[in-house]
Amino acid sequence: MPTIHTDPPTLYAERSDWADVTPQAQYENVNPLAPIFYTEEYKDATDYFRAIVKSGEMSERVLELTENIIRQNPAHYTAWQYRYKTLLTIKAPLDVELRLMDELAVKHLKTYQVWHHRRLLLTETRKPVPELAFIARSLKADEKNYHTWSYRQWLLAYFNDDELWDGELEFVERMLKGDIRNNSAWHHRFFIVFQSGTRKGDEDRDEVVRRELAYVKQSISQAPNNASAWNYLRGVLDHSHTPYSTLQLFVQLYTVPHSPGETAVEVIDLENPPPSKDSQLPCPAAIEFLADIYELEGGNGIPKATELWKSLANEHDTIRKKYWEYRIREALQSTGP
Image (cartoon, rainbow, N blue to C red; front, side):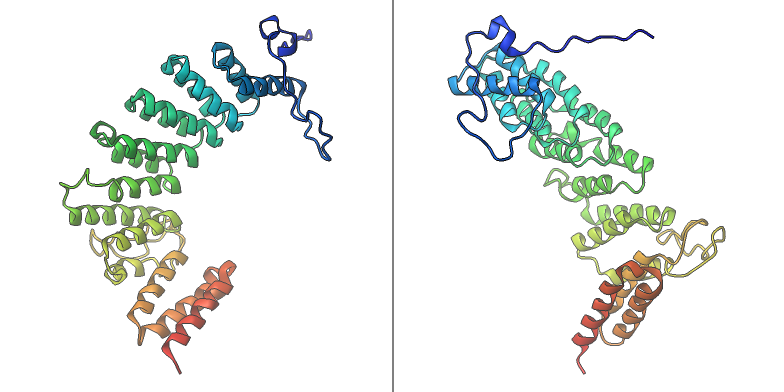
């Protein structure tokens, strides 16, 4: 195959439309001990950017310059900030800027500055609804990306619009159906159910708690060794001030060993779904939960808790052996001689 030759990008120092600007070198009159070696293109662009910042120019060519820098280094905070100020000053169309951000956000999902810039744009455009579809597309590239989920929560809370909230529970259920172990999706579910302010104030909160407990218990039955679901279960109980002991019957189902492919227990009731046939039991998270119930019970519950912690330390969760030994010491010391 013939070799394809790509012409190198034209430096700003070689462009006639930038001839009126005197570039400002980063290390002017300085001899650094450990200089950073940039590419020629990046050094050229940032030298002209420093000159622009010094002169205070805000124009169309400044947008082109900052985009150039951002594409080379998406974490260049100053370039982002100056770009935003320029956009507002020259009254550039922010919808066009958002389309550019569609590209850059997906390309640089883990760069905070990209998402911060998008937030600033939304506070000006005041058009949050189309963002939900954009975020959903972004999550296809990385379903657990912190910045993407954080941006979605900011959008919901900042605009607090019923049109934004209405389909959110269904959205997160689709995400969890796709990956039941997606900790970010579990966190988002807790946010929309329990931390969405008074927007859902007309709901029966006791009914919401019952619904969430049923949902998470069903999830645990499908994948018992899913730490995210157990953490969610604790979160629901703590938030609603529901005693852990009310779930003792359910939790015990997951502390009993059984052979994969066999039904662990008979179905007791719909409130306490049993583990699926392919579950690997006993489940360390269930043993820990049951031990916590016994510890909170105090008295005769402490010896039961210590036995469970010993089983975790010596058999079911040996990687945290030191932690379980610590829990045993603390519990025994609290009971006195």
